[in-house]
Image 1: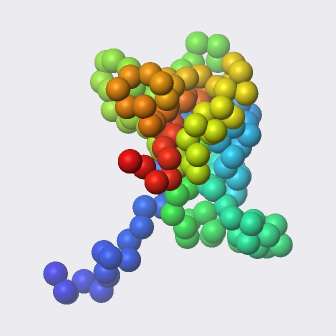
Image 2 (image 1 turned 30 degrees about the vertical axis):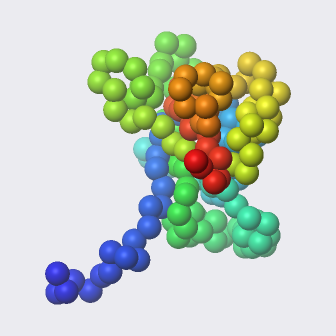
Length: 167
């Protein structure tokens, strides 16, 4: 396959996209509860949707982004581990509107995203402190796998919570 001038060893997973009903509620969940940083926002007037790009950002990158706001979108598309939230305008006003998270019948599909944390027990205690804002799918003590937890965002998408040094 050397006829192609590309090296698959250089490929990285950049982002995944999920559709959200209410961007305010979703941004609160991903920023305040999960601790992600909003990197960039992109509105599409013609298509009537807004894209929100979030990731875990270190202090150095955060300072660079704040000093160079015009580089935010390039940063989002140039790094791994980005979550893209797509909001189709008007869905937040439709009481019965709901996206499929992929975790219910019929047609289970998409399962979850996962984050790694420094201390899974303490992270779960922190999530507990948010009360009803956090919907638990699986607490640490539930089931046979005692080292992982799952929480759901406002649209029902699951986030798996893992210890950084998983065992």
